[in-house]
Image (cartoon, rainbow, N blue to C red; front, side):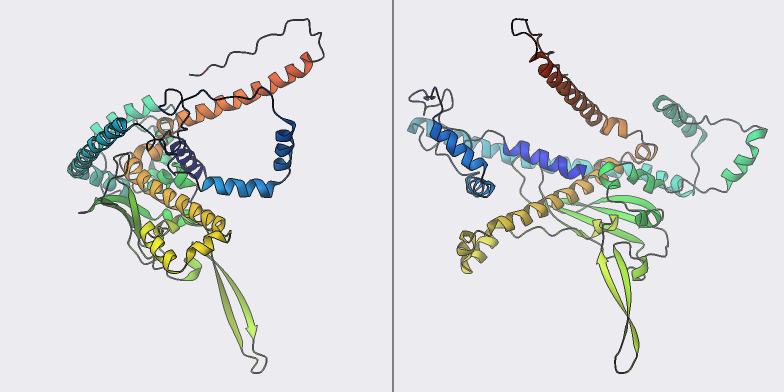
Length: 428
């Protein structure tokens, strides 16, 4: 999914950030630069032969890459080799930064309390919004007039709200029978790309019964999402909840770090109405009694409602290290099976990150701007830049192909003729 791609891109950018661990000791201006690096003027034939052998042996390259990956995050010894006076100054800066961390923790704590305070002010507006959606109340004439102007300024597809003429009498009679705004929350969810990717055709019928989405802050760092449903044929729950907990300590960036999530247990009325599984039935006949029985095979499938059964985060590094030490996991690591464990952990980390992202989208984007997600207006603010970037990249790729064609044609021309300069790369 696109969200997983964004997550991997963000992690990749973070991994490439310059740190003392990944900064080479020969960097310009470094205390370790005693002599300028020597660059060979030619590449020996032996090196070329070695390169060809490596390229022709993917298994060997993979093994080398695996060994290099184990060096990521380890100190290069850059700081240890600094002069004593410089190391003391570095230590002093670390102490100062630690004081800054304490202030950031205080800052984030006050920000959280401020969010809770203002959410209390939003609550009456959200309550009236819900009553209009459900059809309990109607907006005032002033609200309709102001909203009409806002809609007309954002899109040309909104019909004018005016007095009904004779030709529209039949349509108005039908509108009277419509209560509130049908499928409001389903439509809003389907307009948020990362969430829409998780909604299946079977989910749509269930989500059409979704009547409200609410937010509650916890006494500890974290928040709760509440999904209220009308009575339906699928499950008994009237409310499904998803709780996100933050870690007590802030992350390196000064923000709260996702710790884990807990979701409601959905009480499906039967397997046929459980949209998170498929049911395959088979009949079996007893060879002796000739009695026939029906066997059900349940297979988990993708569904939005898997959102309420979040992935479990791995154990802490300390716990894992203690267990592996007791069980002699060092021998397992040397056996070459560590690559398999890394793959599983990476997949789990991506699922955890995606789950947290969906929760944050609902909390920070959907609930405060629900009407804009319903109309689709929010898309032009949230994802317009990404679309423009994709278009630019696509145009550049086309330009690259044209340049390659031009180069191939120029190869046939007389070398004495001057070659045209390639177009300048423009970046906004």
